[in-house]
Image (cartoon, rainbow, N blue to C red; front, side, top):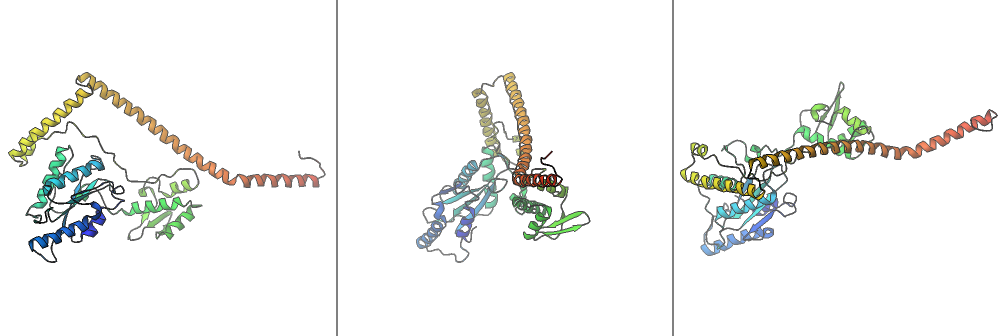
Length: 379
């Protein structure tokens, strides 16, 4: 439920989370004015029916639909969110679907008006609606070959945490970000870097040979050693500042969406043992037949109906993948070498003029010494 529709829609329609609004879809309303349209529908409902609930009246409902990382593109997730909203509200309520891509997993925020399109009825938030939402979302995911949460917990971790996403970065993650920002300012030496960290609010102390860091808001300290992460120990940072090594900021890996699997079948017997109904078994049989037909069509389209040809194509694809992996690793190694070389070139360009003046002064001084000794020419 949404008590403050304007604030909720402003949050879910955040351009930074929705690829500048490209992943926002409105149904029965304009997504840019959905909050005003929902409020207007409520007033029209009150005027038409005379029913007033009071301060606890519901303007809109809000659900979140998450997907496993790497299984779906943002555009496909938005399409499935629209399909869910249409099926759940039977197409009778205006809604907005906003797909967020700011986390490691793609997820939808779906907000629909509590009042129907004719402004004469309201959505019935029936007992067990949460279970119905999950069941419909799971059904849509299965129909599209996506994973579902097999054993959702009614209490404890949220679906977001079940996927392994942590909204708040850890202490070491926060320290690594601060070090990255300090290195971006090109400090002259290690002491200058520590000074920049202090200016950012990081507490820096030394105990023995170890440097200890504590980011703002944290109680415990973290040593600037290998446990802070590869590339963030004191020795490695000193090497970066000396131009001996290139620093690569550590970022969370972004999993690329996997192509849909054409052979993802439902284990009907296991589902029946888990308590699924006979109706589900009939649906699963049809679903499996469709998936098998899709597999056959794929193989026929690519002329892979012969098992020998299929195995040969698979082996060739594997060999090509391995060859590309070797080339990529070699290119990455060469890029690292070039980055270090570039640092040396920059340092040379900065100091070349000083070196030339030094050589000139050296020759002038040498000439003066020779003249004083009675010589006429430099040796």
